[in-house]
Amino acid sequence: MVFAVLARGVCAQGTKTVSSPSSTEQAIKLVESGHCKEALPALKQALPHLTDKQLKYHAAMALVRCAMGLGEDQTAVDTLFLLRRQFPGDPEVLYIATHYLSQLGDRMSQELETKAPSSFQARKLQAEALESQGKYDEAAVIYRKILEGNPHTAGIHYRLGQILLAKAGPSGPTAEAKVEFQKETEVDPMNAAAEFVLGELARRSAQWDEAIAHFTRASRLDVGFSEAYLALGMSLTSSGKFAESIAPLERYTAMQPEDPAGHYQLALAYSRTGNREASSKQIALQREMAGKQQQTDTVEGHAAPR
Image (tube, rainbow, N blue to C red; front, side, top):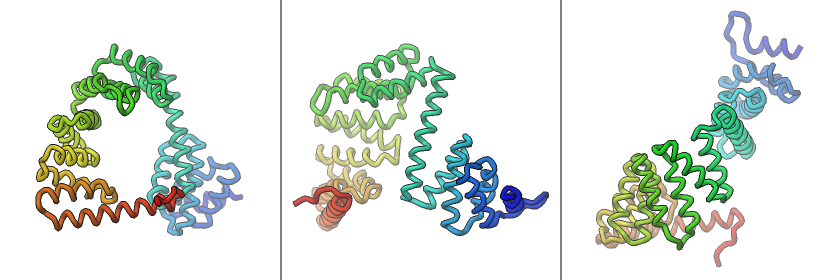
């Protein structure tokens, strides 16, 4: 009887109708009782037309669970993004999204290992897993074997460079890592991340011209790479090029207005170029943003500074 009522609510023969709230509620109840296969078409039909926010939330959640259970990945992903867009910050939405996307990633990983176990993609995935576990030497062996068979594979020299940096720690030697990042830019000239790391290595050694060149390339390759603008501005300031540092620092503060560091660096650049009024405004913003960060830390349970 429920199935019959639901079917009439969704559509009639030859007639396109919109599902009623009652038929949507029936579909949600079907999901709760384990009848996903019967409920799925009704939920798909109803969701775009629902105006009641609470009903739309429950219908979308039911649709996600059904789609996940029935292996309808596209429907599940589309509905999850709809939920994230219309109910931002909802804990249950975030929980289900984390759970499902992790599950989907595991499934894709297993499929890759089953269907193409000897592919460099499968071996790269294996190496990344080892790297995430801190098994750097084992991961590096796999990465180097990938390069033996596929020397022009993008991203592999970058991963080797990151492993070498991780092993070196904050004060260890970085020469070998630098070589790997340089090789990465030769294989993939569009790799903004590799350019950025090379810039950071140069900046740590006070090689300002080299750092500026790398950060400039990183910011041009990826115009949304906000950290590249901050690093570029700081390097220009450190090299005494205060006027030139203003543009990238202004770009950074526009992209990351809540970061006190950006406002501080921009205030310094304005001050060194004689613009005291603009410098004072940035100092005020820096203090305001630092205060907000302190309040956020306290609210989130961190100890407030004394």
